[in-house]
Amino acid sequence: MYFSKGGGEFSQIDLVLATTEGIIVFEVKDSNGWIYGNSNYTNWKQTYRNGKNIVSTTQ
Image (cartoon, rainbow, N blue to C red; front, side, top):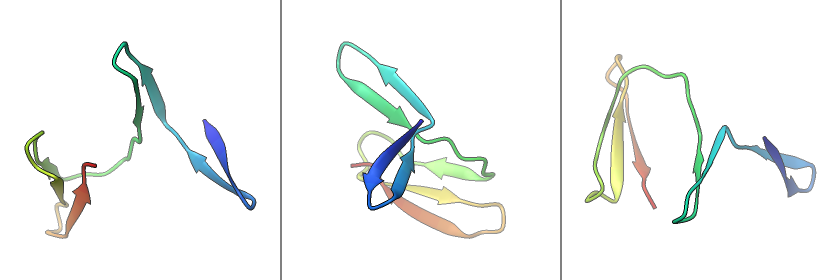
């Protein structure tokens, strides 16, 4: 799905899950490597096979 962000820009949503608790939006990527984290962490770490790391916020 694509949603207008205004000014001619769009945002893509890959998957939407509606539950009794609310709506969850997923973005799906075709990447390889590992993702580390759990519900107690405010940041998750993605490590690619080449050793590059990316830290993402879970908020």
